[in-house]
Image (tube, rainbow, N blue to C red; front, side, top):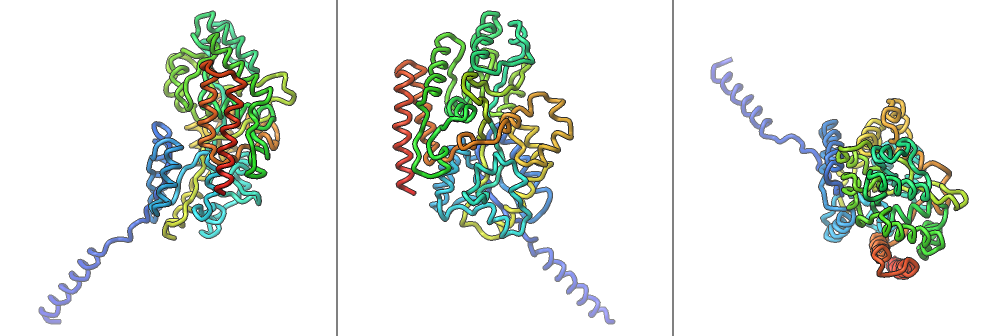
Amino acid sequence: MTIRSKLFGAMTALALALAGAALPATAATEIQWWHAMGGELGEKLNKIATDFNATQSDYVIVPVYKGNYTETLTAAIAAFRAKENPAIVQVFEVGTATMMGAKGAVYPVYQLMADANEPFDPKNYLAAVTGYYSDTEGNMLSMPFNSSTPVMYYNKTAFAKAGLDPNAPPQTWPELADAARKIIAAGGATCGFTTGWPSWVQLENLSALHNVPFATKENGFAGFDTELAINTDLHRAHIQALTDWQKEGVFKYGGRRSDSAPLFYSGECAMYMNSSAAQAGVRANAKDFEFGVAMLPYWPDVAGAPQNSIIGGATLWVLQGRPEAEYQGVAKFFSYLSSAEVQAWWHQETGYLPVTYAAYELTKSQGYYEANPGTDVSIKQMTLNEPTPNSKGLRLGNFVQIRDVIDEELESAFAGSKTVEQALADAVERSNALLREFEQNM
C-alpha cells in the first residue's frame, strides 16, 4: 500500500469518526408533570421524578409547580384549550367530577396502560382509593398518587401537663371538649383545637364517619342531579358546637386550607385536625413538644359511628393532545410510581396513604409502624368498616366552588353574622345552584 493510499484511508476514517461525533445522540423525550405541591412535599415529589429519570435514558419527567390545587386545575384547563397542556396534571379529589366530565380532554389511565402494554391491575390498589377514581364499570380513570384522610394531631406534652394520659387521646367530641378545658386550665395551651380544611374535615368526613349523606344520589356517585344534605340535625348540632366552643376558647378557627397549622406548631392549640399528609409539616415544625396522631373524634349518640373516613389528596390525570412517545413514557413512569418501594417511601416520608396493598405490607414488614406509633392511624380509620354509599367518597360537579361557598358560610356562623341554621341553609341553596349549573353544562 502506498503512502498516499494510507494517508487517504486515515483521512477517510477521521472524517467518518468526526461525522459520527457530530451526530447528536437521540434526545430523551421530556414529559411535563404539573403539580400543586410546594415546600417539603414538593421536594419529595421532585425526588421521585429525579429517581425515575435516573433509571433509564429514554424519558425525562419534568415536574412543574403551578400553585395550589385550584390554581393547578385552572391552569391545566386553560392550557388544554390553548393546546399547550402537559401530559400529566395533578388534580385534587374534588376536581374528579370536573375531569370525568371533560370529554375528549382525558386519556383514561386504564386505556393508557393497555395501549402502552404496561402491566396494570386495579386490584393492586386500595379499594377505598380506586373506587373514588373509577367509572361505573370499575375502570380507573386516573393514577392514584397522594391519597390522604384527615386525622387528629395532638400535643402529648400539653396532655401530660394537664394530668391526661398522653397515650389516650379523646375518641369522642365530648371527650375532646373536656380534655381541651383541662389543658387550658392547666396552662398547657390557650386553645383546645383548630382545624384545617373545614369543609373536608368538619362536614365531608363528619358525614362519612357518621354514615349520613353529604349529598343525595350517593354523594353524587349515582347521578349528576344531586343536592347537598348538610343541614340535617347532625350537621347543625356539630357546627353549633364548634361555634359555641369558639366563644369558650375550646376551638379556634384558623382559615380555609392549612392556615391553622401555626396555631398547633406554636403550642397555642393543643389539637389540630388536618390531612394525614400534614404529618411531614408537623414533624418538621413542632419542635417544642412531643406529638401524637389519633383518629378523628365522633359523636357517641349516633348509632354505628364511627363508620370510616374518606380520602382527600389527589391523583394524576393524563391529558390528550401530546405526542405518542410521551404517553409511552407516562405509562412507564406510572408503573415506577406504583412500585411497592416507591409507594412505601412516599407513604413513610409524607403521611399519605400507601395506595397499593404491596406498599402497605412492605412498610409493615420494615417495622415502620412499630417504630413510629400513629403512622398507621390513617389506614385504620379508612378501613374501619366496609364503605357505604354515604362513606365511599364524593363526586360532585363544581365542587371547588362549592367548597368555597361552604367555607364562606361556616365563617359567617363562626363570626356570629349568621345563625348556624341560616348559614347551612344558605350553603345548601348556593351549592345546589352550582350543581345545577354543572349539570346543564354536562
